[in-house]
Length: 354
Ligand code: MRU
Image (cartoon, rainbow, N blue to C red; front, top):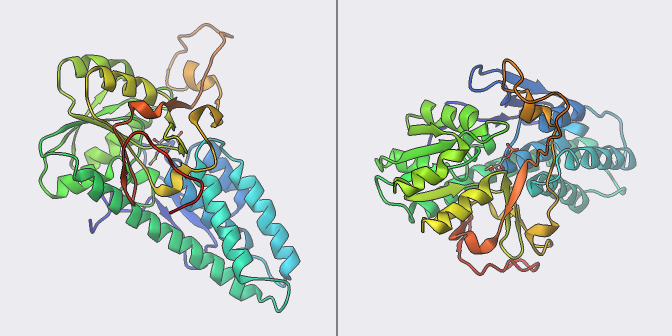
């Protein structure tokens, strides 16, 4: 793939990482507005409000955020820089709990700092440059990762396939192309003529607002459905495979992804439709044994009762349960496709990386 499907990168930052530019995803699909972020507090606000979201994209902005945190420091020694980085790392990695990539990006930057710098003969400009370079490398790796995932996944798909996807695991959720949407963009370039069903993805409508927007803009045949229409589509035999992203993969292959993913996996099993999870190796959490140990973010009930309605329909003060993610049990997943491999059940991601 040699172009950006939307004509712009979803995340940009200059060589010195003094700012991070994102498209404000909360305003899509109606308005394309870009935001320039120049401090970690605005970054954390953007992450918690989902102005920037999607597991791999969170990995890239968290890394750039660490580099940004020291970019304006002048005359500081090793200890001061160390504490600025520690503070930023703590604030950024706790912005959202479920996607492991957020912590992954931060940890990779801390490793880079620790490997290259010590109190003896510390050089601040060198340090700023090294961390900024590392953030750019992470972004470039993320783009390559999407291409690798796309190529691997495409080998499992046939021209003309009708594919269902949930939430947004596309260009907007990564540095470029996406995970679940990468084979779709790649197939589109090769004339595969895929037909895509995108679920709305209640309550935050990532499917309607983001997936439908980006696929349509890239000229892909996309049809929007409500979340509760999946079973009927499958019964009618018009879904050949399901592709979704992931926020965290436990060591046994259980997957945390956008709320609603596990229902689609259960339906896929019932109708004998391949259910594929796509994500970078960095989404594998080798230290968490199974999905029950993954923390699921719970968000404000306002997102369910009010956010998308011009007039509220639910009773005032009704109790609301609003988990942002769910766990899909590993036995429901036909394959986990990463940038390095295609894994099949039973999954076993050892804590010792091969
Ligand atoms: O709450 P969100 O919008 O950040 O949730 C995103 C998802 O669940 C995606 O499917 C996942 O992060 C994979 S993105 C390539």
